[in-house]
Image 1 (cartoon, rainbow, N blue to C red):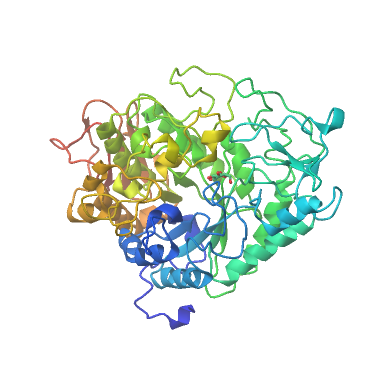
Image 2: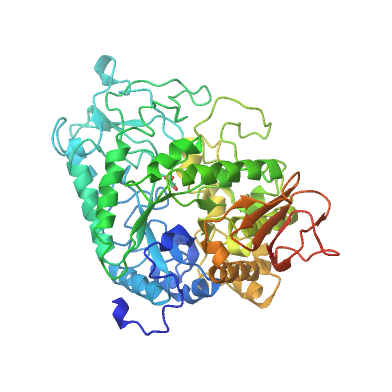
Length: 581
Ligand code: BGC
């Protein structure tokens, strides 16, 4: 649908047509398999997203990011793409996608989709053709095939390890049944890495970008944006003692990660997005997914002429403490300012323990350099980055902190991401039966790491029992816990104090109050110890109390608070926004 065909009242978001919309956008992540099930088969779909657009418009988000919706064997939840220019029949059709994009725009909501450029699925026709072709053929050169080392090529071409566990190389079998070459897969065996040194690969992805930009998509979330370019001389890397394979610790100079060749790819993509600057929607953008430390390394990706934004995973991994949050915020903002990029705050996504559960653990941070046994002792970084804390959870405390974290996150300058269900305060489902676990991490880690399924359980919309309005009666692809009866969107809509209504108030205020659209940020005089106090623009304060006791507030009018004040004081693990003079 063209914008000129929209009813004047339809574009309810006043910032929708601003070409810089992305600098302050609140983006809601939809994991399509688990969001809403319109055809009642236990799996979410594009029509389900269309049906829930009024819910998202009411929530007040500026954009939706849809995790992969492409044809895929779903061996890594859709991050194994078999066709970049179509929709999985499990999720719908291209016509559904077009309708969704138009309907979202009609409500003043922009649309991001996922670009998965490091690897395809092994079901991609080009990988199948590569397998069928001879060593050294142009077909094979689209991916990274090599002869093995050692006698008869029985050893992998390098010692690199897969992020999901095990080796990053798998040996093929020749048509006559003899062992063949090896191919590289930094993730699952079903996710062969593209060869970005072959000019046909960047050209192929230019076409993918234009295919979707032409259909009205406003942006791409770039999956593993610190991969793609690699040192294809394939040097061995130091071994990670925890896995026995080459480490994925992303050290500076790593041959597999954060390679200097990424800059050329990023500039090329930027140029493609910029081709659309003069179209009716304008403002087509990227958000990079890269877990890179320290943030100064990461912000190179969003320096002028490269990508627009990048997830701030330091925020997601920070502990729930004043010192940790202060350090993260204090480090992140100047690092982004130095390259004139907005910050983007993230509390959760489909790869990490849900925030309400994480903040209810004895250890509230995610430190990938610590072992997964709760001992808290630092070891060499391990590769199972996508792991869960096995520690016990105080979920009431976790939910309370998650509400406060939302007040903090949405009060900071720049953009912010909401992972579906965060607005309902959903917890991680940590007790999924083992036989239902689908994340490849579970198998590849030799059943050490339960993987990420616990944050991907289908949303509870309504009713008193599963499937909670996720379809009408089919079993959802992962089972929902009975206690989600208290957390359905329907129930929370009726409760003025619910987490859902807290998010709605925050997003409304954020849209209305100019201070939140300014880049203004300063530590307030009240900031110190266990009280975080941030001044936004001319007249707004964001205050968080991390202490175990209520804290007095600076003078001002409370605009919104995650908990009711007690005798005018901000309770523990609570946050508020104040209008001040
Ligand atoms: C995505 C994961 C996916 C991986 C491989 C990530 O960072 O967010 O869900 O498993 O990339 O594509």
